[in-house]
Image 1 (tube, helix red, strand yellow):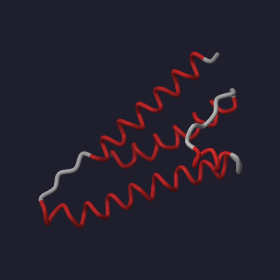
Image 2: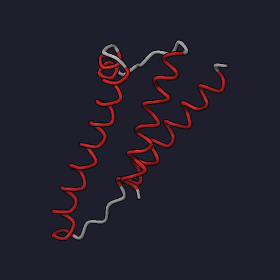
Image 3: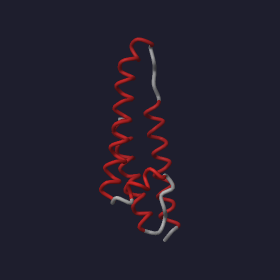
Length: 98
């Protein structure tokens, strides 16, 4: 569930970011600004791709190390919570920018 939640929130974050930019906001992350300048499709693809790749790498590393070291991970739920906070912030910005 945390993996799916992170991926969905990442897409929602990207969509809200593009909506805010259309209303006059600007992207503060220079890497993402570069991709926004290449079009919304490129931005969405890169943002989702980076998130999906990060989650995949984490899961692969965790699955190989967890049994050996008895690890218990809460990192994906933390990522989901962070993305959730970002999405709520963007919704708030959309609300106050009416």
